[in-house]
Length: 141
Image 1 (cartoon, rainbow, N blue to C red):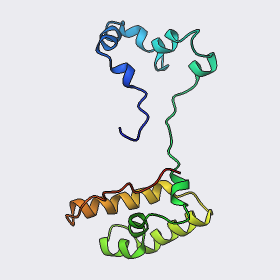
Image 2 (image 1 turned 45 degrees about the horizontal axis):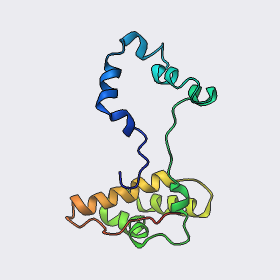
Image 3 (image 1 turned 180 degrees about the vertical axis):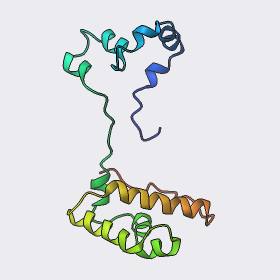
Protein backbone atom coordinates (compact mmCIF):
# COMPACT_ATOMS: atom_id res chain seq x y z
CA UNK A 1 0.00 0.00 0.00
CA UNK A 2 3.05 2.29 0.09
CA UNK A 3 2.44 3.38 -3.51
CA UNK A 4 -1.32 3.02 -3.79
CA UNK A 5 -4.38 5.15 -3.28
CA UNK A 6 -6.37 3.29 -0.67
CA UNK A 7 -9.86 4.77 -0.71
CA UNK A 8 -11.50 1.93 1.21
CA UNK A 9 -9.75 2.64 4.51
CA UNK A 10 -12.59 4.72 6.03
CA UNK A 11 -14.93 1.81 5.38
CA UNK A 12 -12.84 -0.47 7.58
CA UNK A 13 -13.76 1.37 10.79
CA UNK A 14 -15.23 -1.30 13.08
CA UNK A 15 -18.16 0.86 14.17
CA UNK A 16 -19.11 1.53 10.55
CA UNK A 17 -18.78 -2.17 9.72
CA UNK A 18 -21.03 -3.06 12.66
CA UNK A 19 -23.61 -0.49 11.51
CA UNK A 20 -23.52 -1.84 7.95
CA UNK A 21 -23.99 -5.41 9.22
CA UNK A 22 -27.15 -4.27 10.99
CA UNK A 23 -28.71 -3.03 7.72
CA UNK A 24 -31.39 -5.49 6.56
CA UNK A 25 -30.29 -7.62 3.59
CA UNK A 26 -33.19 -6.38 1.44
CA UNK A 27 -31.72 -2.84 1.62
CA UNK A 28 -28.08 -3.69 0.93
CA UNK A 29 -28.67 -4.13 -2.78
CA UNK A 30 -31.60 -2.95 -4.83
CA UNK A 31 -31.92 -5.42 -7.69
CA UNK A 32 -28.46 -5.55 -9.23
CA UNK A 33 -27.58 -2.03 -8.04
CA UNK A 34 -24.44 -2.28 -5.95
CA UNK A 35 -23.75 0.00 -3.01
CA UNK A 36 -27.38 1.07 -2.83
CA UNK A 37 -27.26 2.27 0.80
CA UNK A 38 -23.97 4.12 0.27
CA UNK A 39 -25.33 5.84 -2.81
CA UNK A 40 -28.46 6.87 -0.90
CA UNK A 41 -26.36 8.11 2.04
CA UNK A 42 -24.37 10.34 -0.31
CA UNK A 43 -27.51 12.03 -1.68
CA UNK A 44 -26.97 15.78 -1.42
CA UNK A 45 -23.26 15.34 -0.74
CA UNK A 46 -22.21 14.11 -4.18
CA UNK A 47 -23.60 15.16 -7.55
CA UNK A 48 -26.19 12.72 -8.93
CA UNK A 49 -23.98 11.87 -11.93
CA UNK A 50 -21.23 10.72 -9.54
CA UNK A 51 -23.60 8.71 -7.35
CA UNK A 52 -25.19 7.03 -10.38
CA UNK A 53 -22.10 6.06 -12.36
CA UNK A 54 -20.73 2.55 -12.52
CA UNK A 55 -17.78 1.38 -10.49
CA UNK A 56 -14.42 1.84 -12.16
CA UNK A 57 -10.87 1.07 -11.25
CA UNK A 58 -7.87 3.32 -11.09
CA UNK A 59 -5.49 2.49 -13.91
CA UNK A 60 -1.76 2.97 -13.90
CA UNK A 61 0.03 4.56 -16.87
CA UNK A 62 1.44 1.16 -17.81
CA UNK A 63 1.44 1.75 -21.56
CA UNK A 64 3.40 5.00 -21.12
CA UNK A 65 5.88 3.33 -18.77
CA UNK A 66 6.51 0.56 -21.28
CA UNK A 67 7.12 3.19 -23.98
CA UNK A 68 9.64 5.18 -21.94
CA UNK A 69 12.69 6.22 -24.00
CA UNK A 70 14.79 3.74 -22.07
CA UNK A 71 13.36 0.96 -19.98
CA UNK A 72 15.03 0.11 -16.68
CA UNK A 73 17.66 -2.54 -17.28
CA UNK A 74 15.75 -5.19 -15.27
CA UNK A 75 12.61 -4.67 -17.38
CA UNK A 76 14.48 -4.59 -20.69
CA UNK A 77 16.20 -7.86 -19.71
CA UNK A 78 12.91 -9.45 -18.61
CA UNK A 79 11.36 -8.56 -21.98
CA UNK A 80 14.25 -9.73 -24.10
CA UNK A 81 13.85 -12.68 -26.48
CA UNK A 82 17.02 -14.14 -24.97
CA UNK A 83 15.42 -14.20 -21.53
CA UNK A 84 12.25 -15.76 -22.98
CA UNK A 85 14.39 -18.42 -24.67
CA UNK A 86 16.35 -19.15 -21.47
CA UNK A 87 13.30 -19.36 -19.19
CA UNK A 88 11.21 -21.22 -21.77
CA UNK A 89 7.74 -19.98 -20.79
CA UNK A 90 7.10 -17.59 -23.69
CA UNK A 91 7.90 -17.78 -27.39
CA UNK A 92 10.90 -15.48 -27.94
CA UNK A 93 9.64 -14.23 -31.33
CA UNK A 94 6.23 -13.41 -29.85
CA UNK A 95 7.85 -11.44 -27.03
CA UNK A 96 9.95 -9.52 -29.55
CA UNK A 97 6.84 -8.75 -31.63
CA UNK A 98 4.92 -7.51 -28.57
CA UNK A 99 7.80 -5.26 -27.53
CA UNK A 100 8.38 -3.89 -31.04
CA UNK A 101 4.69 -3.19 -31.70
CA UNK A 102 4.21 -1.57 -28.31
CA UNK A 103 7.33 0.59 -28.37
CA UNK A 104 6.62 1.77 -31.93
CA UNK A 105 3.07 2.75 -31.00
CA UNK A 106 1.52 0.32 -33.49
CA UNK A 107 -0.36 -1.43 -30.66
CA UNK A 108 -0.90 -1.23 -26.91
CA UNK A 109 0.54 -4.34 -25.28
CA UNK A 110 1.42 -2.86 -21.87
CA UNK A 111 -0.56 -5.41 -19.90
CA UNK A 112 0.84 -8.34 -21.85
CA UNK A 113 4.38 -7.02 -21.42
CA UNK A 114 3.78 -6.64 -17.69
CA UNK A 115 2.70 -10.30 -17.54
CA UNK A 116 5.86 -11.40 -19.37
CA UNK A 117 8.16 -9.28 -17.17
CA UNK A 118 6.41 -10.26 -13.92
CA UNK A 119 6.50 -13.95 -14.85
CA UNK A 120 10.21 -13.72 -15.56
CA UNK A 121 10.79 -11.89 -12.25
CA UNK A 122 8.74 -14.59 -10.50
CA UNK A 123 10.83 -17.26 -12.20
CA UNK A 124 14.03 -15.56 -11.02
CA UNK A 125 12.92 -15.53 -7.41
CA UNK A 126 11.01 -18.80 -7.03
CA UNK A 127 12.62 -21.11 -9.58
CA UNK A 128 16.17 -19.82 -9.95
CA UNK A 129 16.35 -18.63 -6.31
CA UNK A 130 17.45 -15.11 -7.22
CA UNK A 131 16.81 -11.92 -5.32
CA UNK A 132 14.08 -9.34 -5.78
CA UNK A 133 15.43 -6.06 -7.28
CA UNK A 134 16.12 -3.55 -4.50
CA UNK A 135 15.18 -0.48 -6.55
CA UNK A 136 11.75 0.27 -8.02
CA UNK A 137 11.39 -1.10 -11.52
CA UNK A 138 9.66 2.04 -12.85
CA UNK A 139 10.13 5.68 -11.92
CA UNK A 140 7.16 8.00 -11.64
CA UNK A 141 6.10 9.21 -15.12
